[in-house]
Length: 433
Ligand code: URA
Ligand code: CA
Image (tube, rainbow, N blue to C red; front, side, top):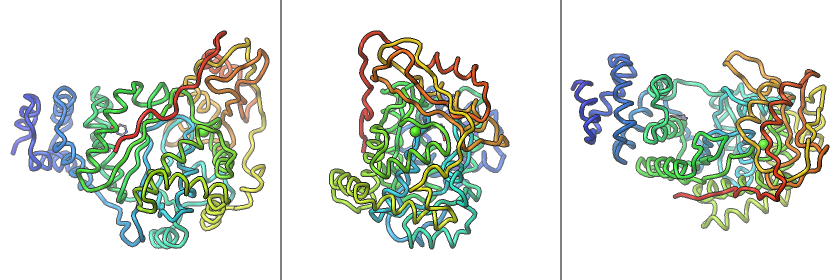
């Protein structure tokens, strides 16, 4: 087999065989196929697309390019959740204890990563003592005992995807639905999920700015999952404005605690119940999405979900009293209000720009070696559709430096205030299974 023939076949719009896809991904992983040939291939896919069968084969070939996590020692159906980016997305912090509290095993492997805020691990580390330095055996034992544990990323998962994703980044071939879908799904499958719930975001703060593109991506991922034997469902949700109010590490932990107490922001609460009910349903702990939704509502109302969060935090060395006393979380030195310059209704809050502002305060990492400040970030006071009076606060900046003039300037451009009444965008656009 020769790579040049595979490129030609794809260029001309023919379907590749499983053997051809395997040959290519194995060759690219062990570096017998060079970047220039792989870039030509990626560009051919960009224009010609891939069939459903090709997408499934590409995903499995990338899964097989590296280590796979074996979660078979954990009892029950392991359901993983993946969100396609976003700003201030606090859902994982809420969902892990919430679905665990109704018996769904959550074996979460998480990274630190780059972005507007830290990853799930960074956020949890704002709780004094909490750590993810546990070995595999402890991890499995904890999930079996408490139904939830988080461990840091280890092993060499999907090296083919790692190389291909960086190559796509510099060859203008990131934005191809078959390539995005197989990239995301290969990582979830290699991490050991039996079933997968996808939260595909759409809007300014999302990867897929357009709703029709988001639907296509969701459908592509659901098809891949189901074709390779992992039950997969997707929810398409709004990311035109940030989810919830808090964007920052400790700030989001506090928001998650409030949500588990039933006192969270309406949109975050609703999205967590929706995603959570899909997880509970796929784990076969409920017979319908409606039944699952009710179970989760009841877990919040009864305090069971919050209790589970305490157990989980304590089991990994954290101080569970933080749930009753969130004042113990790291606090920034300065709280500075962004006062509205005019009265009206909030028309838009550009999500990714708010993310940028949080990052400038120090909440996120620009490069993998940057240090993050767990205490800082932004708490919105107004969301789209809210009425605002001149002088009222649009947002609070939590900062460890006093001069935030530049960041305020950026934030003023992020909020559009209309003289006419505005309405909040829908939270959930569609569900795909
Ligand atoms: N995220 C991924 O992991 N892969 C892509 O191709 C795009 C976004
Ligand atoms: Ca949030």
